[in-house]
Amino acid sequence: MRTHRAHTRRWPIGCLVVALGIGVAACTEVGRNLPPPEATYALTRGPVSRDAYRLQPGDRVNIKFPYHGKHNQELPVRPDGKISLEPTGEILAEGLTPVELEDLIKDKSSHTLRNPEVVVIVTQIGDRRAFVGGEVGRPGFVALQEGMTPLQAVMAAGGFKDTARKDSVLYIARSTNGAYQASRVDLDAVVRDGAPETVRLNVNDVVYVPATRIANADTFVEQYIRKLLPVDSRMGATAPIL
Image 1 (cartoon, helix red, strand yellow):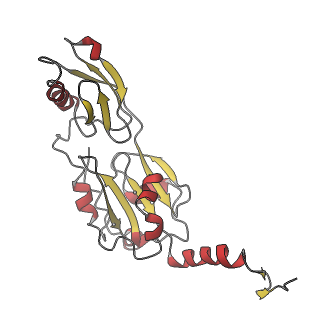
Image 2: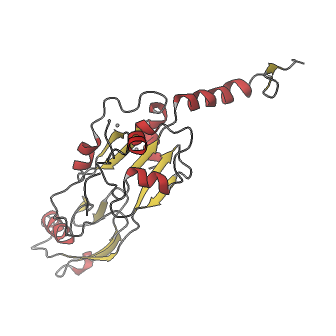
Image 3: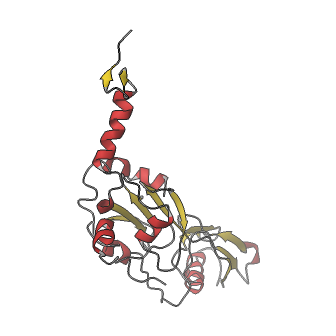
């Protein structure tokens, strides 16, 4: 069940974060032109009723064709939310109820099968995880609890580092059509002022905490100054060049 998801301001899972250039964005004003998080959260709300189970990546489904048994198959919902069947090709299963997936498979397979009937059975529920990266104690996946907020996910990942830029946290979610959208959330206001968080995390959502400008400057100095020049950091002076 999805309720409303973190505090607004505007602005993806390991490789997704890199793919969207978060490493560059962290050095500047993050997410300046991104939509508010409420808009990103709204995209994850499909037409399925709240009390019906929606398929998620990692779930296993047993798909039976009662009159075309050779096409029966049990398979997982992939991380991209899709499954692939011979009669249908790739289809997006994430966010659908088993009944809706049955209808979709019937429709897609009717082009190759005569009067297909389909039964979808969920045989295994996959792990429910969200990804937290950046300036947190233990970057990586965290177990997703019902109603978990971005701040709670950060705390589950070891909390903020001193170098974290709490006012420019990135929240990335995938819409019901499989596309990712990102927004910026101000967790500093949540921590400092008790501002309410307006979104809740779903499976495979991403929370990325960028570094402050000071932290980036220190990294630059460490990588490009102290390791390249003969500087004795204990003395604060240039060591003799031999």
